[in-house]
Image 1 (cartoon, rainbow, N blue to C red):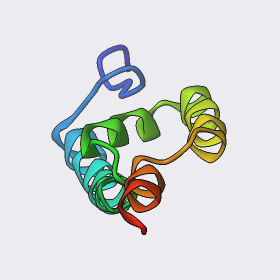
Image 2 (cartoon, one colour):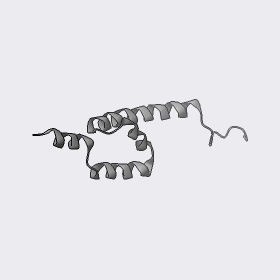
Image 3 (cartoon, one colour):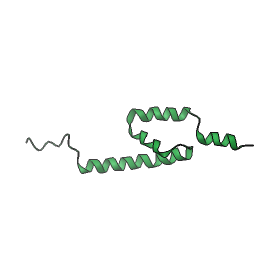
Image 4 (cartoon, one colour):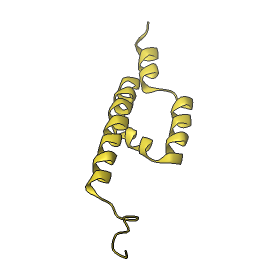
Length: 75
């Protein structure tokens, strides 16, 4: 039974599941970031386990570009 071990092999199903997961995470995260005034490309950070928590805290603490635009345009 030497050749029947599937552990460690990446199959087409793994790629399909990862693509679905990436689409389900990246698309809404990118839309949220765009509405906040940030580049949607920052949504790629959401795929990395520890980095996404750090990015969430940074996002919560930095001044948002949308808020800065509202302050400068108000009379």
